[in-house]
Length: 449
Image (tube, rainbow, N blue to C red; front, side, top):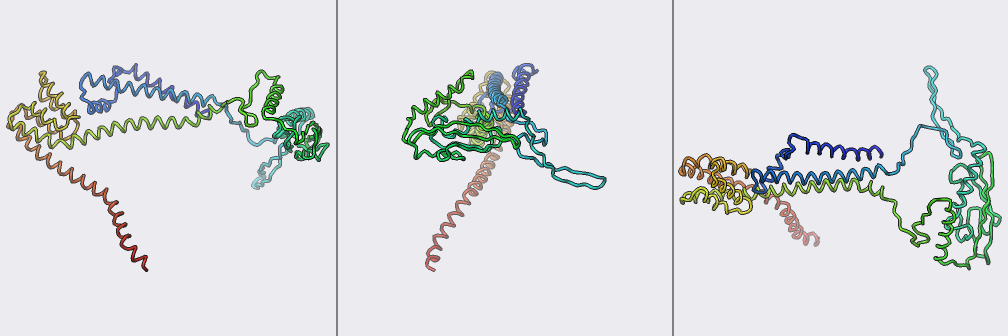
């Protein structure tokens, strides 16, 4: 338990140190140390280039970095809480002689005489107490038994319920036999009979303590009250609290109990350490699920983007070809054709055309646009445009016509695959529906047999 707690404390500390060193002392501490996949993902989700992409990537990484540090800090605090819990482990040094008052222990002894081996069970008896130890045990038992025998009673001065007469002292060192001077009121097993009492009666209780060799008798005086006397709950609680306070005056502090006879005195909780142990794996699992779901949402958004761009590609390239045939410029044709998809395609194309308008290399911009969109069909299309655009519109139109034919074929194939997937999903409902119909048809015939 302690070893696990130490690891829970040290591992987050080591992880934080490693991350801080990597973050502030690495050769890439300017922000380029971020995983390239993050930059690529952000670039696909938004129109980001150059400095804006670097800033968005750094902000994204910084946000995840702070969340991760906060999680490590939480784990460190919880691990420290586990470490501070009191240990319940006990050291074991093998079989030892049982302590005084305990039962004998048996150990298996192996005897070897040359080639012969024999085993037998040796009974190891409990240790006998010295005279001083016996007297100390009797004295301690007398103090402990005065509280233990009370049972449901608050005091021996006001006995209304059965007493508890244990067979051994609380330490388990001495055997006890019980007797009273009024067996009709308090029996040897602690049963209290007060049906015939008309007034309070004092009964002497004798506990005979023995270690098997010596014997001592400890006496207690109990006052049994008749059933006719009733004590209110408020009086009972007040008396119990007063007795508790009086009995603990040797202590530096006096702590009230949680409740007395169903009456709440003070609400107190000492389960913080145990709750930390129980909640630790839940918190770790919750944090893991949170980060997993966050990444899953981003992947789902990327997948949705790819599906949308893939579905509009045929219309985009066909409109682009028709516009160039009509005599429109390449930039105008691209902006008009990109209107088939406003969320992802239009911002990408508009940004690229604006960059060309500022004097950037046309071929390089179109090739970069295809790579930024990231889908194979767009990469192929804009690579073709970047190569053919400088050579004239006639060669560009020839290549675009081929792209239209290829896009049409790919669209048909995609529709066919999607139809197959839908039909496969409908197969099970159709089988269930067929089974229901067959059951309906056969039921009258079976019921009439």
